[in-house]
Image 1 (cartoon, rainbow, N blue to C red):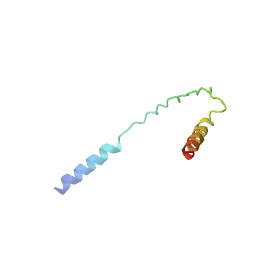
Image 2 (cartoon, helix red, strand yellow):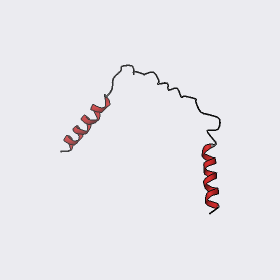
Image 3 (cartoon, rainbow, N blue to C red):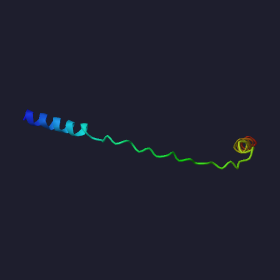
Image 4 (cartoon, one colour):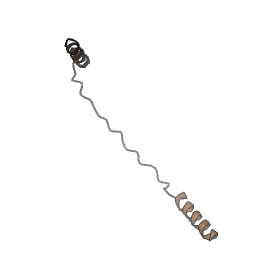
Length: 61
């Protein structure tokens, strides 16, 4: 019984040792995504201004 288990373990380890091939890996070209730069200079101010307006409205009640 021990020889059967040992043989199964050796067969399992030997089968995974040869997985893969010697071929060169295929490397694909990177995908280039261009972003549209159509934002205004005040785009970073809108969210803080809305937050301040909500805080002022909440404080005035």
